[in-house]
Length: 306
Image (cartoon, rainbow, N blue to C red; front, top):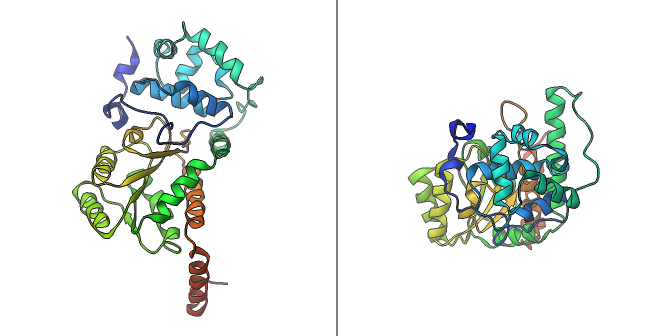
């Protein structure tokens, strides 16, 4: 029996198979191994299990050409037959043909062995690799620059983050409020979020920024769909181009999370949020003046300990 059918299914498994990669409305794949892998998956309708495999392969792009189907299945948390079916779905005769193709587009040597590291070191190394992947994606700055212009032009700017992504949204909103005239943090889902989206649209909002991290709450997908119906452009920072929020996002910016500890780590999404802040500041001509004004007020109030 294929054990995938018995796995605990998350919200991503019920969001439907009509997912897209970061192409189209999202960022284009980069020139590195991860980017070329992502390009390989674009245009294919992937099942939830296949998205899990694709996500794993992108995160381990340098290692995948040297992994057996059994090893890849173990890393992705799926069955070995699922890996074989995934390769066939991509148009290959089987996994060996896919791996041969990957060896032609990936680095000649696998990454350094981290097998001697303890679990804490391995978690840190995995986050370092996530940051390297993010750096390769940012080799093409156009998607982030486009996002920055959209965020700067939206008055007000609603920022959505629920559950695991709440801290990412809060951090972005905290800093964005220093340079943007009207930032509105949305930290409640359901009809409360709908009410606040309606209010933002009435006030002139044109774009909503969302941070979406696993496990993806169904209410995030529903809220983004509502925002699009209300006429807002949706910019989303998510853990993967294959995340279930991709189909309800106009521009998706991927930043992988670490999964080696009991709770996911999100260094790359946090850093991508700061990069977005920088790009937004570039679209706000008075950003520097606002920062200087804040610093002057803070000094006068003795706000910070020197």
